[in-house]
Amino acid sequence: ESKRLAKVVTASALGNILEWFDFGVFAYFASEIGASFFPPSDAASSLMQAFAVFGGAFFIRPLGGVLFGILGDTYGRKTALTVSVIMMGASTFLMGCLPTYRDVGVWAPLL
Image 1 (tube, helix red, strand yellow):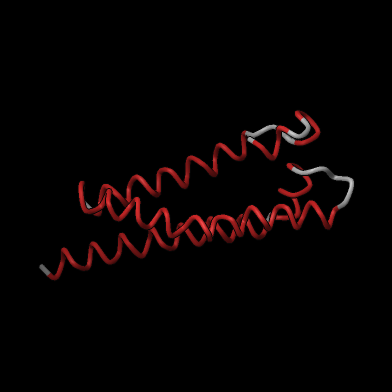
Image 2 (image 1 turned 90 degrees about the horizontal axis):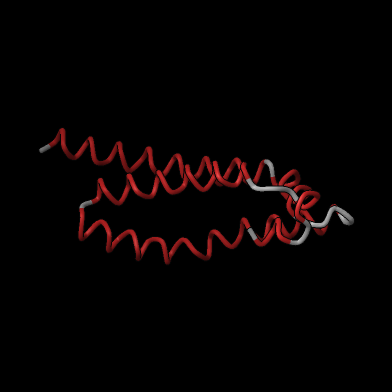
């Protein structure tokens, strides 16, 4: 029982670390993200828009907690953790594949 608890705590800690790493990377590259996905005419405005997207993630977290809590109760915590980590990694990868504002204009921030 003690080994199982240690495994669950370790997996939860690693998932949490990965989530905060993802937030940290976004914050670190916010100026580049703002310049790439928002109109580059005003650098300060582009940066503020990037941080608004970053802040939006914190408002969505409680909704994710509810949804993944239900998923964890229904299918198990391991499944919920695995799905959430895969979704975070996939969304980060897909964001890197998005076209820039220079390529598609106003569609860039909407995608």
